[in-house]
Image (cartoon, rainbow, N blue to C red; front, side, top):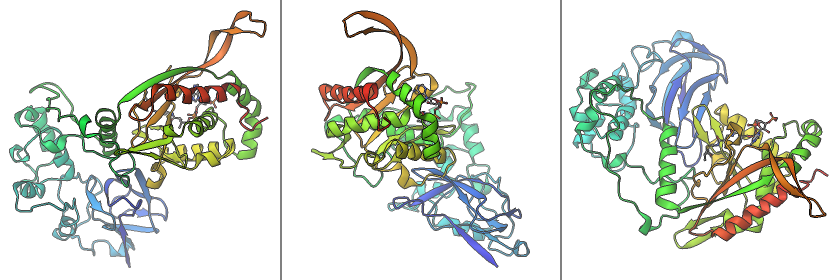
Length: 454
Ligand code: CO6
C-alpha cells in the first residue's frame, strides 16, 4: 500500500507553493504528524506534517520547485514498497533544485504543473530555456538581468544549475546583459492578494529603475538568491512607499508610567486568569483601537477614488522571525478585552515563529502595529502595509528624566517610563491634523486609561 502526499491548499487564494526542505530522505520512516517537509507560499512559510506513519517511498518534487496545490509531492507507505513507484531510483532529499528528477516518470509528472502560465509559449526561446533550468535559476537570471542562453549549463541535457549560475555571476556575468523587465518589483498586493490593487494613483507611477550591477567583474562576492519571503517583503515595501502611498510621519512622546504600573500590578493575576503573559502590547493595542474608533479614516483603505471604511478593526502585528518578518492579524480586535488581545497576540506570534500560521491569519489587516522597541529602537518610521493607510511603531519604553508640573503649578524633574511612538500615514486620505489627533487619543489612553483592570 502506498499513499500520495499532495501539496496542501493553504488558503483560498493560494494556487501554488514551493518546496523548501524535506525533513526525511527516501527510505526513512516518519511518524504521523511529524514534519515531513516545508513549503513557502506567497503568504506564509509552513511546516507540513506527515498525514500518516510510514516510510518515505518517493520524493516527487525537489527543493525549490514550485507546483500547484494538489500536486503529488511524495509517496508514503510500507518499506516493502520501496522502489516500486513511478521513479526507478529513490531521489535523495538533498538533490539540488537544479538537477532534474532522476527518472523520466518523475520528470513527466513534474513537467506540466511547474509554473503554469496562461500566456506561455512553449516554442519560444524563453519556453525552451525554461525547460532547461529550475525556477530558482530562472529567478536568479531575472534578478541579475542575465540571459540564460549565455550561461554554460553543466546539468543533464545542458541544464543550467544553480552552481553554473553562481559561477557565471561571480565572473561578472550580470553586467553582460540588459535588465529584464520582469525583474522590476511586481505590483504585489501586500498580504492580501484577493484585494483589488488598491490605491495606485496613475500620476504616481514611477518609471522602472535601470538595473545597476551590484558588483564588478572579478570582485570578491557571495551571491545568494533571495528567499521567497524576502522577495515578497522587498516588493511590498517598494510598492507601498514608491508606488502607492505618500507617507507622512508624526512622533509622539508617551508617558507609559501608568501602563507600566497597571502591568506590574496585575501581571500575576492576569497570567493566572488568562494563562498567558501580559506584555505592553495588549495595552497598546487597546489604546490604538480607541484611536481608530475615534478616527475611522485611519482604519480605511483607498480604492481608486473611493475611501473604504473598514467596519472591523483587524490589527496586524509585525512579528520578527529569524528568517524575515510576518504580520499576523488579530481579527475583530475591537471585540476583545485585554485578556483576549494578549491571548490572540501571543498565540499568533508563537505560531508565526513555529511556521504554523495559515494564510488567512495574515490577511485582512486594517491597521498595523510594529514594536521594534524590543530591539532597543528609540522610535521608528515604518512603511505602510498595503492596502492599509497607517502603521504605528512602538519605540523602547525606558526610564527618562522629564519635567512634571504639580497641581500648584510647580515644576520638578521626575523619572518616568517614556516611549516614543511614530505613526506613518497615507497623506492621500489622512491629513497631518488627523494623524496627530489619532495619536493624541492613543497617548491619553495609555497615560490615563484603566483598561478594564481597575
Ligand atoms: N520597550 C520596552 N520593553 C518592551 C517593549 C518596548 N517597546 N516591547 C516589549 N517589551 C518587553 C516586554 O514587555 C517583555 O518584557 P518582560 O515580560 O518583562 O520579559 C519583553 O520585552 C519581551 O517582549 P515580547 O517580545 O515577548 O512580547 P511583546 O508582546 O512585547 O511583543 C511581538 C510581541 C511579537 C510584537 C515582539 O516579540 C516582536 O516580534 N517585535 C518585533 C517586531 C518587529 O520586528 N517589527 C519590525 C521592526 S522593523 O518596524 C521596523 C520601521 C522599522 C524599524
